[in-house]
Length: 435
Image 1 (cartoon, rainbow, N blue to C red):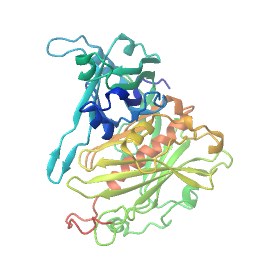
Image 2 (image 1 turned 60 degrees about the vertical axis):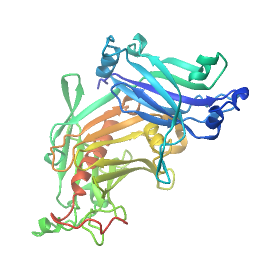
Image 3 (image 1 turned 180 degrees about the vertical axis):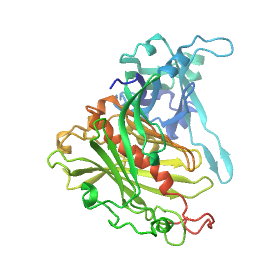
Image 4 (image 1 turned 180 degrees about the horizontal axis):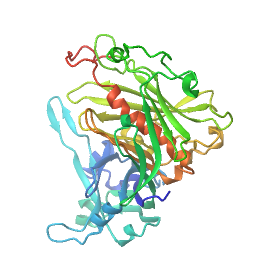
């Protein structure tokens, strides 16, 4: 499998320094007593925000901390490196630092005060696909230094480019149609896996029967039962030889919560993601658990929460991702330590993900194994033809089976959009908001 070229632009080691002689200067004293933040802007990408801690004059911020990351593919680099003109100036990375918080107090709007701006133009080194530190250190920002010539407020940051190659896969049809899964490399599509979806109850000869949530008997009233609960869904991922190399299946049925007719946070449905057991032929080993439920609001969303399962920690569960996906437009499920730390996902930790071919013993893995992007899966909203697009960081894939386990996870995410649909056409809003 050949990966596609991606570049990771990381901004970190943020800090704000105020020289002691200037602490009593009007405005600067306010900076030292108010929380500071910044907006990080790059043309063609959503604005990202981050807190900027104050540093003492002698201290240097943590060089390993990451405040923001952008992932650039070939088309992004070409757009950023295009020559500037009068209407479209040269692209640059822009970091605008503010003091104070956005919002209101007692009904009166509160404005942030802009301290200064750091700009770094996009240059040829961005397209060389090599690790390079674009900037590292302190730099004066704001009007104070420019107007008085004296040291003023200084910003510390570290801007770095790193190659981040990825494998890109796509389901060629909706998951329920048991599609082929191909790897994308430019305009070339290479078949890698096939996906087999089933709603039937598992047979007793199926090795997954040890985990299955439903009964082995299929009744004539199964269609009617699915109006009250959704269970018995199973996806198997097969390699080109026809061998099953990963699977996902519902272990906790998707059922409406008491007082409403949708799957609520208080009682989520759950999938178990499994891989072949290397020690026991025809057996499966749990690898991860995906929970999903519906969040009601002006725009409904599906929350997908993924835990990695560890036998090495007495069967513990390690929260890796909790993502909300718009039910109408769809969205992206991802495992990315940078983005999750910034968004404050509850319980998210810098946790190593073991290869599906590894022993699963977390004690032997360093926490630095997982830094930044791991995988993403883009899916469509309810009632739309969803053909999941999956990206995997190359450093987490050592064999075909490693990629297969993430295909099973992606299929479970996609099917969760359908599993969390309301159970009746007409329903009342508001009965279940507190669940």
